[in-house]
Amino acid sequence: MEATTTATLRIGVIGVGRIGRMHAELLARRVPGAAVTRVHDLHEPSARDVADTLGVTAAGDVDELLAADDVDAVAICTSTDTHADLIVAAADAGKAIFCEKPVSLDLAEVDRALAAVDAAGVPFQIGFNRRFDPGHAAVAAAVAAGEVGEPQLARISSRDPAPPPVEYIRRSGGIFLDMTIHDFDMARYVTRSEVVEVYARGGVRISPEIGDAGDVDTAVVLLEHANGCLTTIDNSRQAVYGYDQRVEVFGSAGMAASENPLAHAAVVRSEAGARAATLPYFYLERYIPSYVREWEAFVAAVSAGETPPVTGPDARAPLVIGLAAWRSLREGRAVRTEEIV
Image 1 (tube, rainbow, N blue to C red):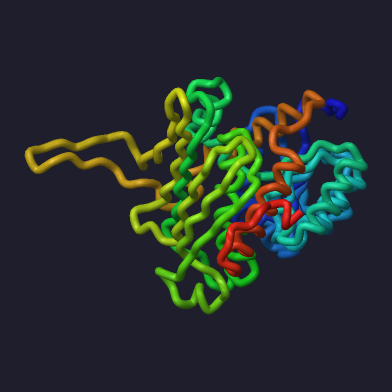
Image 2: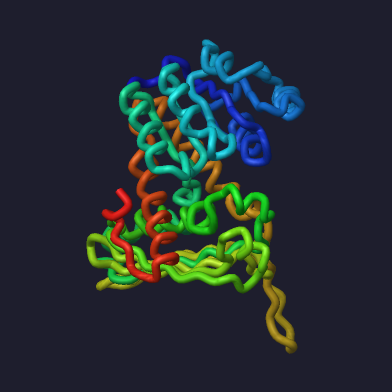
């Protein structure tokens, strides 16, 4: 991969809804070495609003953005069903690619998109931002350094403060593909081992509407890794006390764990007891530092002509695990990941 020829990586953002606007604003204001030059959205007022706010060009369509000389890389932040086609188009245009997860809910579409990336030889990074959370990253680093010895058990708790709209659930692929997919990636990341078997159980404990949509809102997944480590993941769509995202790896020489950051660091103590702040409630409050670090890593890699840290195989593997989890839940058995691929 060749290094970019400009000192600043010029990025076009495709899709500027809530997540795309956040990415555009972070790139424009908080990521050294990056600049937003163009944005596009099918909803033209959204594109114009972001373009005017950032002082950049609103592209009339995707082709215009991809053909622009002032775009070195693209951020694909549109709906999941459009990702594969946009990846193929961006690869054909020779642009470096950052894509929000997942590439697709269909494994064949993932493979088609990643094949286009490989054929074009362009840098590609999938947006698993939690790898860049300082706490989670420190756990992974401790495992990599051998501080916990041979990983034997991992535990991941991932609980959202409130369920998403049922309309979103109906098109999202369900809990294992829109929520737990982050945890499947985290399991591979912190244990440094691929998943070979998946056993999932789930229920509807929060909202009957979620069950009516064919999803579950409460789940536990057991993963077996190639290195023998066992990972348990527990998920809930509703933790009333805020975002609860914790990771632990236990090994032959010790353990490493990440706890939740609080809204602030103050503690009040009196004879009645102690009181600390609540957890962040909105995901942007919880994970903005990880999004910034994610972009810093992408910009640094592309600018240096190096491979980005979260690549095509990292985009594919969590989807395979998620599809295996759904098959396990529906068939009531453990599913080998080789059955999916």
